[in-house]
Image 1 (cartoon, helix red, strand yellow):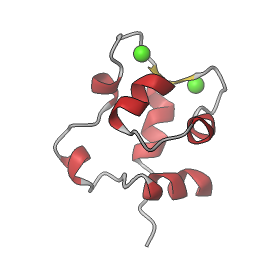
Image 2 (cartoon, protein in one colour):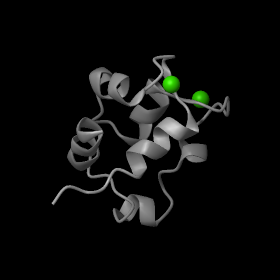
Image 3 (cartoon, helix red, strand yellow):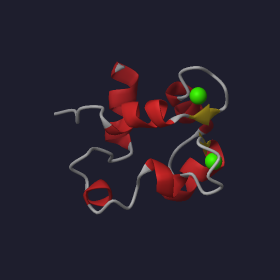
Image 4 (cartoon, protein in one colour):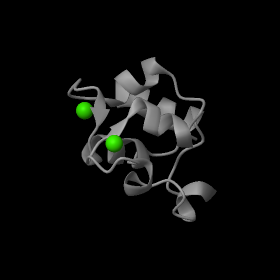
Length: 81
Ligand SMILES: [Ca+2]
Ligand SMILES: [Ca+2]
């Protein structure tokens, strides 16, 4: 979880971040092909700074895509002080 918090901070993500406040980055928007999971490529569209290593960290069950639950874990990571 600490690593996810660090990643969220690195990417400038938090529920308070402007992109999220505007609803610009949410699961349904990122899931471009609407298969119910966000692939690395789909996440990269919104977060060009993300790396495959970052993605692997978020992909808790290792199936190669982020489920809604896995994506929510990133959004809900508390912003580091
Ligand atoms: Ca998808
Ligand atoms: Ca997964």
